[in-house]
Length: 102
Image 1 (tube, helix red, strand yellow):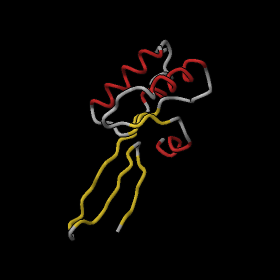
Image 2 (cartoon, one colour):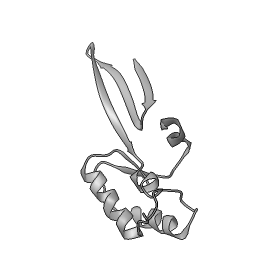
Image 3 (cartoon, rainbow, N blue to C red):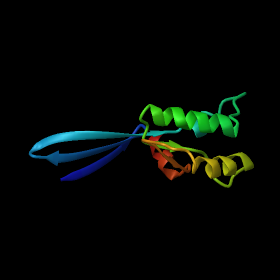
Image 4 (cartoon, rainbow, N blue to C red):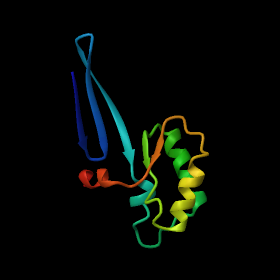
């Protein structure tokens, strides 16, 4: 049995295993996009790469990297992020998914 719930930036997957309900929480982080929306905040590409690596180290599952193609900085970030050796996270573009979490 499988059900999914998207709530407050967390993608929660419930499944039954041997008759016992278990929960796995996947975290979708928007720091690299929403975190840049405050006055006076402007992450460099290097900043964004370092932050992405730290979020991965923390065990974050999905890191929203911004809008690829929207500006030269985001284009370069996505190009360079492909070379990051992440253990836990997947870098994803900003999408309509985040509009459901607000």
